[in-house]
Image 1 (cartoon, protein in one colour):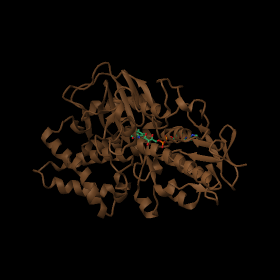
Image 2 (cartoon, rainbow, N blue to C red; image 1 turned 135 degrees about the vertical axis):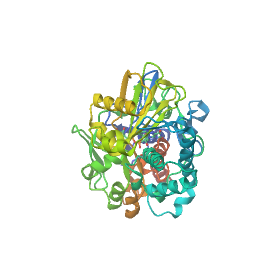
Image 3 (cartoon, rainbow, N blue to C red; image 1 turned 30 degrees about the vertical axis):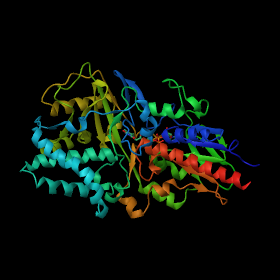
Image 4 (tube, rainbow, N blue to C red; image 1 turned 180 degrees about the vertical axis):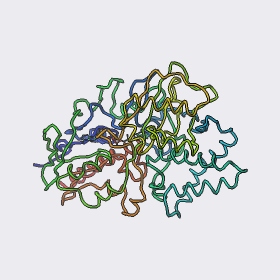
Length: 478
Ligand SMILES: Cc1cc2nc3c(=O)[nH]c(=O)nc-3n(C[C@H](O)[C@H](O)[C@H](O)COP(=O)(O)OP(=O)(O)OC[C@H]3O[C@@H](n4cnc5c(N)ncnc54)[C@H](O)[C@@H]3O)c2cc1C
């Protein structure tokens, strides 16, 4: 039978940003037979906006990063949905584990070294053969040497904190696993890097993609009836040239002409060997092994009133060496990777904290009570004043969830060694006639905007366009 745009059966695995972008674009292009299989009981994936305190919080994607060339910004710029975020992530206090707050002039000098290194990297890393950690550490000490003398211990404590902060940007356990050159594959979009969604959250973007009219979770707009929830895929059989066979964990089987797989790199790492029959080509497995999806988790603490004094725009935690050694020998060792707490736009009663890496993965295994107890201990250790008891505390568990297994991706030094990258992860598996059968989308497959929502959306559109181009060229040939 002649398959056409109208009859082609397209199964999209995952209803996160990439899946929704692919499905909505395909429908706009005239494809009709589209279904999204989603393991969770909600859409959005790593966008998860939930009600909390005075309005909402984003457990995953939170800010639109930049304007020029940012597909999310382009889509919403006329709608007045986004706003520049206050500069809490620049003006925060640096507080030491002996409750001493760094004087502003010292903190500002150290912060300016850290912040200036961001644009300067673009030129300097081209020639650099090493990790981002090597680069930042060398650069930092060179610049510190040019300043009026600073207590060496304080400079070291600040550098440690800056490493953690930057590791959260990369989602790396530490910066020594991030490729210096690979870091340049990421393109920054010009313009404010932290644009927030006021009191509405990132789900506003998904609503626009789907053309949904209301805020209700069950309003899927043009995807109504096309998303099947709690459908976790266990296997995709792409053998031969006929139907692809998709198996769910509950035993259900769905056949397709095309499958677009948008599961995270974490899911691929854990499951690709059993998920794909036959096994994926070597180049793709190399990319799955070489690239990495690290862990960044958030804490949200709700208080009855604004918790910090008005001249405290948030704070970063600088550990004294002796305190750190004591901490490492205790049950609370995971607190070493909690690097700071900052306000949330439109949420005056909230503090948002961050934790990275292996300690974040450990934190995810603790009970909520243990987590809260640890954070309260941290506040008492660092802050020169008492914080009120929070009304509520929420933490994320992006790694523990088998449908994510982490937060977002980065380019590793190991990927450099393997000479692999997003291009290998993106490559579709075609039949001998050039028909795309098994396609890959999702943030990790973007060559330049990986780790972001705008990157994920572009990959969904890319794969929709791939199918559209294929069917258009067939129509011309007929
Ligand atoms: C803590 C955190 C903070 C972030 N902050 C920002 C930010 O401020 N700005 C920004 O731009 N980006 C941010 N990101 C990154 C951004 O959220 C992601 O890059 C983007 O949402 C990824 O979309 P995706 O479609 O590629 O993947 P996902 O959203 O992960 O979608 C994949 C979908 O596949 C489903 N799935 C997985 N396995 C299966 C299976 N076996 N069967 C069926 N379905 C399956 C999942 O449930 C999921 O819904 C952040 C992410 C995190 C975690």
